[in-house]
Image 1 (tube, rainbow, N blue to C red):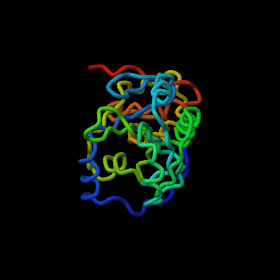
Image 2 (cartoon, rainbow, N blue to C red; image 1 turned 90 degrees about the vertical axis):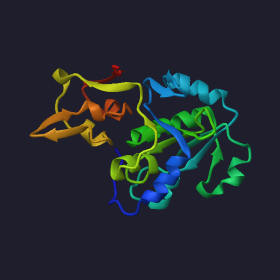
Image 3 (cartoon, rainbow, N blue to C red; image 1 turned 30 degrees about the vertical axis):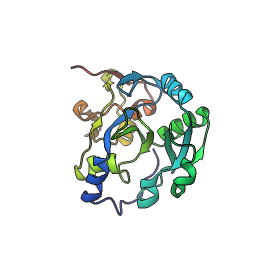
Length: 220
């Protein structure tokens, strides 16, 4: 997980509400495992199909981290799809550039490695996501708004949830370091997992050295 800096500025409650009002939903997206997108459960190969069927793909710097700079996570992480061909010209602030499907998949994998949570955003008036962001809790308006200030939009978890195999856990704490949702803690040298707080982002799975975590379908 990328090293974090001290948290400084953040969005005000008013700004967070204005942003939330523009969104229909934001959906967490695990990498290399099943994910929910456009009301369906997809794996990374299907996300790749979505990208391949898109009219265009643009990669931009993260506006939230550019504005607030509360961490040293990667900036080049925001993916826009099916936007106007002059998107880069009309939105120059975050240095967007047109990229290939392969470059988009690599951007997702790299930001996952850095400990960022992938979220697909559906804006009001649209029925499909146009933006896939890699979010941190210290700068992101949606993820940070929920975790830091309790200002929520319609954030949907994955249809999957982490499942721990306690007999294989070595209590190394690596999954605790990776979890952005406070679902994992260390207590007296033992890992504690609150499944009710899990968003199914999959960050814990790729860092577990003993393959003691998997994603399973949520019950109910």
